[in-house]
Amino acid sequence: AKDMAYEHLIDDLLAAQKEILSQQEVIMKLRKDLTEAHSRMSDLRGELNEKQKMELERNVVLVQQQSKELSVLKEKMAQMSSLVEKKDRELKALEEALRASQEKHRLQLNTEKEQKPRKKTQTCDTSVQIEPVHTEAFSSSQEQQSFSDLGVRCKGSRHEEVIQRQKKALSELRARIKELEKARSPDHKDHQNESFLDLKNLRMENNVQKILLDAKPDLPTLSRIEILAPQNGLCNARFGSAMEKSGKMDVAEALELSEKLYLDMSKTLGSLMNIKNMSGHVSMKYLSRQEREKVNQLRQRDLDLVFDKITQLKNQLGRKEELLRGYEKDVEQLRRSKVSVEMYQSQVAKLEDDIYKEAEEKALLKEALERMEHQLCQEKRINRAIRQQKMRKLRLRELRGAQVHTVAGKEGWDLTPDPSDPGSPALCRVGRKCRGARTEKRKRIDTLQLCLQRERQAAPAPPACSLNG
Image 1 (cartoon, rainbow, N blue to C red):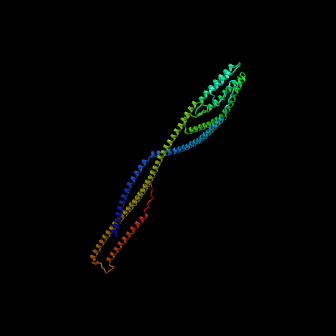
Image 2: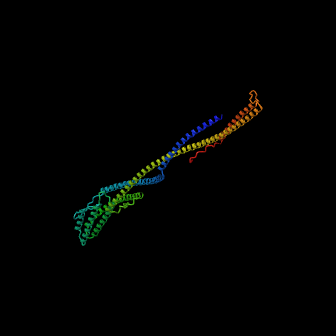
Image 3: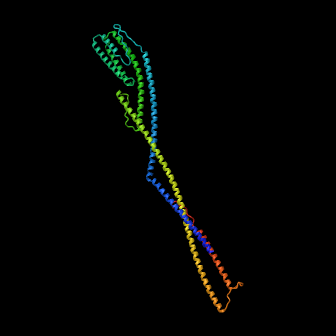
């Protein structure tokens, strides 16, 4: 029975050693996998080092700032577009008002021209006809003829003075006609100069009338009658000029309002776009033709600056959108790398847990092996002690038998055991020996079972796995 128990224990030890070897191989494979995982982790960490993280953070901050700037620029562009639309509407309304006023003015002029009768005055002595003065300009030939007739007919003490005054009036009228020809343009844009020339025309007519009135006492009655005819024509011309002035004033007000709106719009655009070189903020109201052309060129240059600024802003917006797309791609790659890193970390944690469990199992198996070896050593000692006791008992028996034989030889006893007699001393001794051996075996088996149960109960539970282990 002892030999069987020893054989079973040896088989268990061999099986445990085989399991330990197989587990050691698995542990070595797992260690290799761990080293590979650590190398991969180090590679990933090297790829995503601190510099790249800082650059990514800076890029994220730049993206946020650029998104804010983009929103601000979009708001400004919306404001500018709304302002431009508003100004366009106002300009359209002003253009419509200008067209309406021009049509009105043309209608008034046509009606006045149709209503004006051509009056002709005939003199008694010389039958000289004097035509009424036109609203816009006097013809030089008619004026020269009328004033020459007046000079011929003038008689009296102040004849020379009247002639000189008439010459001065003629020179002034010629100068006025030249100015009108210069100031008149095909577009009729210079309304301010025309109004100024109309005022000058009225002044010249007043001067002529004063000259003629000064000459009235020296002139005869017929000359006075001849002078009254141009006076009636001048009244009609004044009425027409007043109507023209009212139309021109309306047009001038509309143009002034449109120019004011243009200046406001250009100033707002310059302030919104930070354009400091806009120099066309000058009113054209009291400027000459050359100065107006210069201001027009300046305004054209301002328009080019605004167009260049808008194109620049559009290009900047396009570049910033491209940068945003690139940054979004980088952020997506970073997220993917983070997900892969988390996956690798979870795998590494699982591998570490498995390695920790296997190490615990290995430690438990080592402890069990040590206990089994200790038990084997104890059993060997017990067996040695039992053998020694047996050897001693055998020696004692041999000594006693030798003594008995010596005594029996001396006294002549018969020591052969009788099998039919159960009470013979030899048979009693043999039965006692067998019983003692059986009891000793049972005691040993019981002690071994108790030791195994105690070891199983005293075996500690495996501790919880830690990630940092």
